[in-house]
Image (cartoon, rainbow, N blue to C red; front, side, top):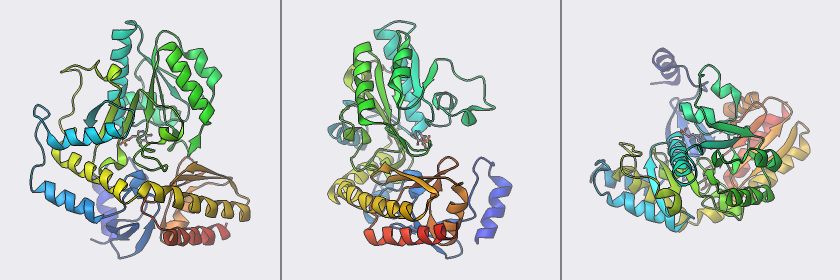
Length: 396
Ligand code: PLP
């Protein structure tokens, strides 16, 4: 099928929930995509922070075909070798003691909220169930997660929402402290607000947040669905903040493009869940967990975290260079290969103009251009991307 046919078919049969771009990628290799008409694109979006090893990485492709021929799925009522092995890898490389597997970021966050509520009710008080989240946050699209999300436009039309969520401005420790009473069981926060427009808070803020949670016996949940699996230059973004959460959620890049989510926790919280408390039919099946283990091994063996730090700095300095030349760029922000340009103009027309020239970027909020290259990206590819941005910005 050609692009026009795919667009017509989608418009007829797919529910209209995404503002889709008029491009139909059908093949990928590394940082590159080809559409149905044969046009080539440099992918600086990675399927929204998912294909961190790029497209068709040989080790991932091999793992997929190997496990597809061995075993795809058994119920979680059985012991699952690859699930246990992946959980061990995740725990050995993080603060966590135990893992619960599911299929997406929203689902991982749902699991975190359920765990935190049960912990609060069991270990503190039957009325201790509230969760504080941040204005500008994004936690997913289920009913509880649009409630958790601190953006009105995501909730509109879906009320009544779920009781028990409260919101404070991101980075404002005073407002947070005011809300931290005995009814609060957890604070849920992204280390960097990705969907919110690549917004950051200071290391000091996160340190104070951690000590307030300790002082008031409130759980700290980090949503690392977007920042996790190497995106910011460490396996998890919390490592650069000098603190650890009690619960963390991950998804997106964990299995290199296969659907997976996970909720990780310290034993003192994780032990609250008992058989029958939570479940997911597909969660952590042999197929996705084998592939996810391969993704993690590849990330370490190919020293991709070093690459993220080095190439991330290189991209950032290129973006700073663009900022000097183009006054409509207000700020360059982010970490590693999760970068954003805050603009004085709308980001969408720039995304479309870059797309036209073969570069895939994304608009996060109205005025932020988000840049999420695969973690394998080279300096040469960064130069190619920067050149296209330069050409597009010159025409503004
Ligand atoms: N949390 C964060 C920080 C995200 O960025 C996203 C998705 O963009 C989600 C949760 C939801 O993940 P999913 O779409 O896999 O449910």
